[in-house]
Image (cartoon, rainbow, N blue to C red; front, side, top):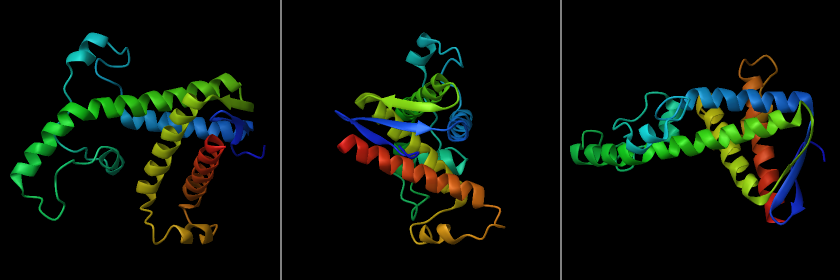
Length: 190
C-alpha cells in the first residue's frame, strides 16, 4: 500500500497511513466537526431533546454549510419567490438536523478510527465502514472546495499552482482527499 486504499475483498478496504497523514486527516475531520456543530441537546446528545428538536428554517450563512444543506425548492434566479422560500424552510426544518447528525457521525467515526491507529499503521475497514469513510472524505473535499472556490473549469489548474500561492497547502489537501476518495471507491468495487 502506498498511502491509498486497496481492496480487502467483500467491499472492504485497507490503507497504510503514516503519522503525518493520519494527523492531517484527523485534524481536518475535527475542524469539520467544529463547523457542523453539536447535535440537538448539545455534546451530551440528550436523546429526548433530539427527538423533539426542530431544525432551522433559514439556510446557513456559512458557504460550506450552505453547500452541505442547500435549499430544496428555491430557485436562485427567483430569490423573492415566497412560496418556494416557505417550502424550503419547512423541508429544512424537518431534514437538516438528521443530515447534520449523519455528517457528524461519519466524521466522528473517522476520527475514532484514526485514534485507534495510535499514530501510524494499516487501517482496515469493512464494507459498512467504507461507506462512512466515503461520506466523510466527500464532506471534507466539498468543504475545502467551497473554501477554495474550486469550479470544474479550474480544477485542472490546481495542479499548477506556484509554491508561493497561499492556497497551496489547502489545494494539496483537496487533491489528496480526492485521491483517497477515488481509491476507496475503487477498492470497494473490487
